[in-house]
Amino acid sequence: MKDFLRDNGGLLLIIAVLLALIVAVTSALLKGVADPLSNLTNLITTPIRDGVSAVASWGENWYTDLFRQDETRAELEELRRMYADLEEKYRDAQQALEENVSLRNLLGLAQQRRDLDLESAVVTAHGTSNWDSTLTISKGSDAGVALGDCVIDEYGYLVGVIDELGSNWSVVMTVVDSDLEMGGLIARTDGTAILEGDFTLMEQGRLKLSYLPENSELMAGDQVLTSGLSGIYPARLVVGHVEEVRTEASGMTRYAVIAPETDLNGLKQVFVIKSFDIVE
Amino acid sequence: MTRHDSMVKWGVYALALVPVWFLEGLILSRWRIFGLTPMLLPLAAAAVAVLEGTVGGAGFGVAVGLLSTVVYHGNNAWMIVYLALAGLGAGLLTQYFLRQDLLGCLVCALLTLAGLDGVRMILWMVGGRAPLDAMLRLAGREIGVSMLFAAPVYLLFRWVFRRVPKSTHF
Image (cartoon, rainbow over all chains, first blue to last red; front, side, top):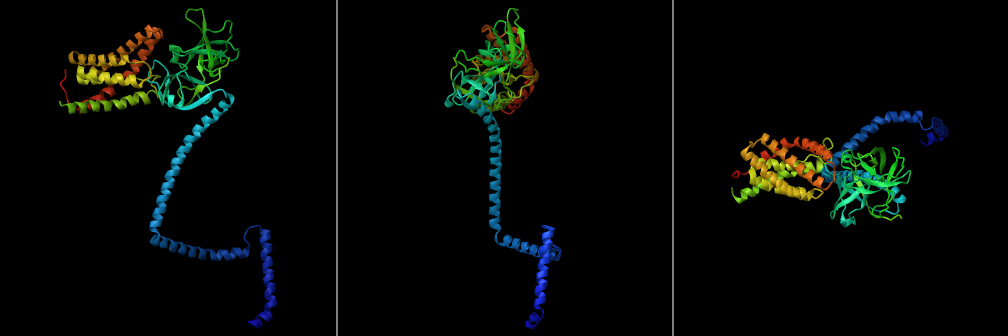
């Protein structure tokens, strides 16, 4: 061997260096793709590696089955529990996402209307009587809600007024109920009038704006707000927009039909205005 | 019929009233039919009165009226008296003029609903709350929609009636 190395060593070293150089250069030239030699080697050895790996896996499984069955079952149970937890969290997250959208909208409103002290509530039922228009919400006197408090949706549109109060629930008389009456303000002209529910219009989900200012030129689409002049209700809450102007049966006065901005049938979450700054 | 039998019978009727109430109060108030919520509790009072006669009908009418007053919005205390009277009347009608069957129940239900809206209209007219023509239109539509449920409600309570202890009918 010594003789061999001595006699051929230099040549082998040169061969090694050459091979190294070839491989290095080829690798550099191929930029990440295996060089032909490596490729050939791996091509031949891959089936062998796979076979060995399969046998090893089989052995490991066999060992696991034989000695770690209880551990595996426990692990499976744990995974099932985790899965159930994750599913529950997912459901909660979905709910939270929906609530988040409402709260984000409300945040915008709260930043605009710092004068309002709001309490969020969920609409739990719609009124059964066809003779009035009401909603039942999930907050009552325990949360500081009081009779006559205004209720708005996430966009700040007026939904109605608290008409009946329980400890953890309240009934909201909606803006289209025939018993509703409050001061209204036409946003474009700043003219004041009276917003009131009307039995006939209630069926159509509308209310009326009566005692219109003299010479008022209302246009379809004019936004109507709460005037807040009485101090009972907050000012400048959006109620709806003018749909058309009609003349009373007497022919003496006119009134405007108002379409509420809030979607009374689709409401899920609302906000009760517990207190507000009175605008003089 | 023993006191125990009587309690069981009225307990089962009360249980049968629960889905009717849920349907009216929680489902059909949300998903309305032609924009209206049908009046199912008065229908239940009429159906039981047809099946049980005057005394049972009046008693059940009181219970249903109380439930309506307690759980629904507004001052509806008069409903207790009205439904007791309606139960009594329906019991009398089936005793003397009508048969104790679906047709008899439909007639009694129609009269009960018409009377109910009639009383309501009188109260509203006294209060000057709405014009008569608008109230008549609403009442007509409301009765029409409610009558769609008269047969199912009657069949539910007849199913109960056939499975509970029988009392003497008047």
